[in-house]
Length: 82
Image 1 (tube, one colour):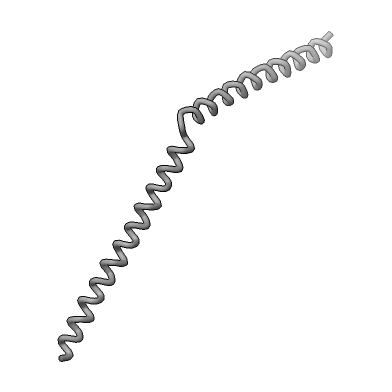
Image 2 (image 1 turned 180 degrees about the vertical axis):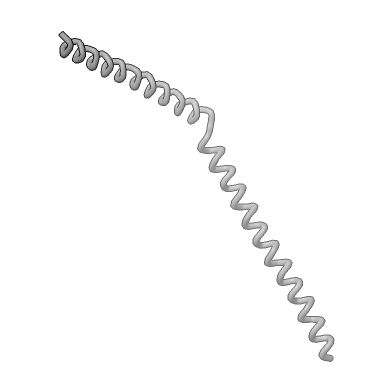
């Protein structure tokens, strides 16, 4: 009789571990699917193109401001030298 109880406990534990592992794997797969969907929604072609356009505009602004700063420094150096 005790062997039957032990056998039942072993089978019950195996079933519980199997179910627990399956639930965890489902949660991980669902999390990965959610992350993939979020990334694909965020990095659409329009969003990436808009980002690069803004980055190009910022580069042009930086270029113009640094040339203005360089001209101002060059003007001050000429004033000091003369």
